Image (spheres, rainbow, N blue to C red):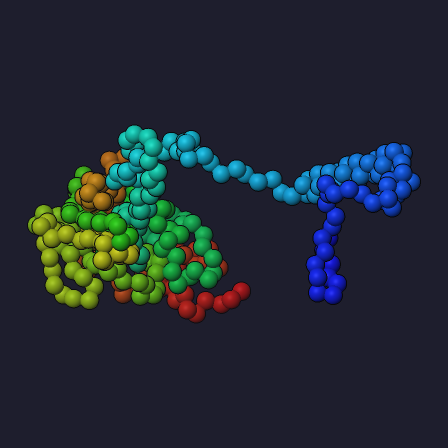
Length: 329
């Protein structure tokens, strides 16, 4: 330890080769061997305490990870060289690469057939007394209950749809392309219509499909007309398409015409491409055919208020029923 006194610096004494004075000799005699042994012991104990303290201090420090040696670089984790095919599967080619395999975009493309909001059905060769009991529907559906009756009419061999009977739906995302190339009818049976009874199940305008498709079994051709124009296009070669920049949903109504005054049984066939994959949609079969009446003259299927409907409260067929005036009981 150093200290200042009067501008001069004095350091701690170091062993000297100079002779000791008589006073120093006496001091050395007074401080005998036993005294120096005690001092040495104290110094040794102090050294042990310092070492223990240092050890405890080192125990509280977080462990450190040694840096990797330049001579032994870390071994890379084996990866895969991956590529994406059209269906989203990854193709592996070798090791040592780290490539992210991005799955293919989800497809929203499809086309389907379903019953369309028909208004009338024709009961062949029978009076109102011969009409079968239909499925019940709630009072609040009195103005529109064709959906509740669609399966019943399809399963009843004496029932024939009037006018539009099917809906063609199409959906596509921005990565899809759905193309309808043809709509046609296969006729299984055809017979002249006889006197019958017309039933009604829809009293509102309903929703119009984006396109109207008409299959003419006499001319053996199909044409379609967009809802907002009067322009007719033959199919084929004309097509209906959805997808890419025109993504979303659209539908088309399908009506089948034939010789006036005839009842038909057959099948509707739709040929489509969904993302370049051919699809054939059908409605009707030999065991359960699709049935329709061709009555452009209006001699059989009536639309003049004389149709019959099932009264949801009285539980009977009523001619000219007005669903807007039904009581709430």
